[in-house]
Length: 565
Image (cartoon, rainbow, N blue to C red):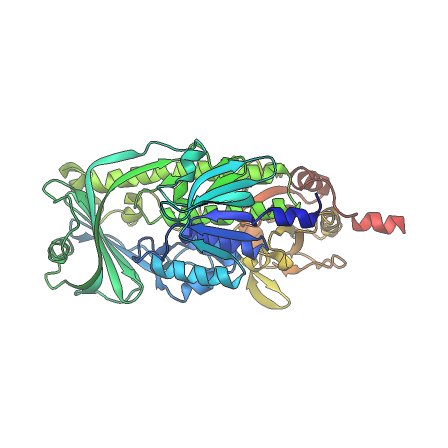
């Protein structure tokens, strides 16, 4: 079959089912990589309520890498501090923006605002969105996936054909059980969440730049900004004596006054009053053949730390660059296969973490409350510990067992100053380029305009003798044009490479990577996670890694071309 015939056979290279924030982000990421994409959505309109509404630092980094972060930030409030109270006693505020990221402030918006923004971007990028259709079957074969869909109850069956399918159709996914990847959720008994989005007047600051959380007898409450001048108030609590229905505005105002200790607190103009109960679970697998799960289609997340949608954004970015590389012929099978392994394990880890935080938050007795009251003044980070994590910003998400990891650094110095290992996020740091101070992230994501580019950081370790090894490494990766080298030099300049040179004479980058005095090679994936580390004088190991993960050489190396001439 020739290329023209293959194109005509498929409605899109990738079909994404679900046009919520995760499906739309997946679609945008695929279009960012130049992949043809069709989104299918059962809903006719955007959800009317804000629902998930926050973006932590690490997801913002990933969104920036696909050109979405700034446009979302335009309609978001930037949060710098989280305030915690235990039984009315304030704990030390958490400066949430005190994190080593270009995007330290948490963004708070609204799911409806996020969806509309992402829809506009998707359509501007040439994506296609088809609403009002329900998927009834998914049929896989050796070359692609056929999606069977129906409009309305009695509409005729329609079929759409793609090479790969991403299911981002939410917690009630219709596709997950079709793949035998369903799971039985674990229900948390005797607790309920009551919630309102409304205008808030109270004695504390009304500026949308802070969050407030309150641990009180039998419960936990939060007050968060929602785009448009509103606030969200939620109360997770023991359900004893609480009516099993949506609350009234007067009921929410009464409990809010009691919990916050502010008798003047007033709620008005409610947009959304709701109640819910809790369950959690993770799919036993995130891939089945040519179909991939993303977001709530693969997990049920507890509302602890606002992690659910953010974890789904990782899914969207991670599956998109792998599909793009595979469709471009740039990847060995291990690249695409690694998605399910990495994200499945991460969701399982996050779920266990959330359960711990939730049990601390809701299932507390009087003894625990007494201890918390005493600890409130003694433990500066009590609030973050109660949430089940001190990494709410998701900076610590890592893939320590990924099949894409390879660590070939050797010697005692590696044990003394280990630095970030393969699977961990490549840290950002200050460097100098062309006489101007900039940050390393500018040279990691979309390196040299390659959206699926892998950045090769060549550190000289402040050695005057490392130049030849670094040039050999640059030459070694020329068969794979999407591997983009950068020289990170703390010592003498190196000429002749024809690649970006980042000056690090103050050693900030070398220090961040644990490579002071260590000439080394660090290969960073398109998602900003480290894949490979090795000694600078062993470019052969780097080339072997590339052959294993990308396939055989696609072009002849520079040295081979010179020798042929």
